[in-house]
Image 1: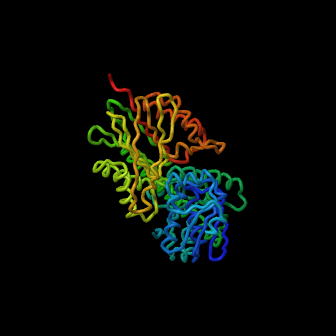
Image 2: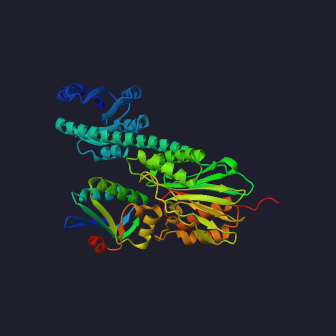
Image 3: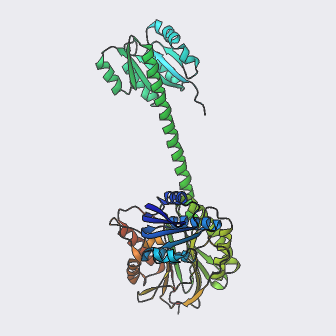
Length: 108
Length: 389
């Protein structure tokens, strides 16, 4: 699992690559919370995410909650079909906004 | 915890040595890190070792009357293998030094004793002993943690149903195999009014002890809610609310709950973010249960869940499973997947619930082969059997 972070106009874009499972969920949590500052908008580009377990989903829910409490926006984009299915089955696509592409979410 | 001073047994037939050691090492003794006791030969040393379990280290000469140092070394490991020994040998006496090392000596110093060197050697030996004892203590702690986990495993398995209700019109069989000692998966069968049966399956995010603790409360809340008002949508709503109110860790549980009426074959269900169960028809074809669009429990407060109703024909089965089944991996990184599960059920679906359920586990194990189990695996099968004529 790798996270590449860049900032564009007060928006933090974090690109997650590889697998997030129970073995590295804690590392994932620390990396995300370390990367996120006072950004008013945070976008996770999950286009290169190959697998996410329930422990990884838990981290995303915690991030979503923390950002919501700060009044910041949070969105996911570019999910592959299997990853999107994980969000659909768990119902978390109703909690965290999901966009088709980075361009789509930047324009929104 | 402060370490009590180490006790070092010095063994030498030279009567002057005791005086010399006491004098040259008095400053180190005064710091309270260690102190000395003395013996004149191997026999006396062995007696002291047997009488006094607090001796940590032995410093012994090799040539002594009655019992020499090399024989003593062999005996020390029998008294206590955790005692560390240092031998004092004549300068250049490689033969005896080698023998001593082979018999378990930790180090050696040569005669005439250089006390500076002896201090360093004692320090190093005691340092090693400290680390060694810490390692032993960690090992003991691990063993006791493992014992606790074994008990937790038994407790968890004992709250899962192990006997299954026998009713006219249905058979049920379920099983959970945790990936570690304890897991976050569970299933339950609740006896309700009018001969109805409540069927639940759940999967707590994450694994191990935190998941197991969360799982225990899910299962208890679910049972309580189901006995109060068995409407599946209401049950999920109540459990969601109770879990969300006190959930700092951000754990969640995907949960499917259904109420089956064996007399009519009707099944009312609600799904809170769980993998959709499979409805297996008598001819082996299977379809996913239509979604009720529910969110996993414990995350969002005040949710209202939807429920749906279907009819099971005699010979139909409902298979509830967790993603430990469909996401089981083999050594080529392939997932077991829904297609393979459906293939198993094409044949196994026409058998009774126990056989069908066990066939799923067997297929998953055969598929995974040598690859270690990564997630808890749970499966619960309900079969709507032909009614007795």
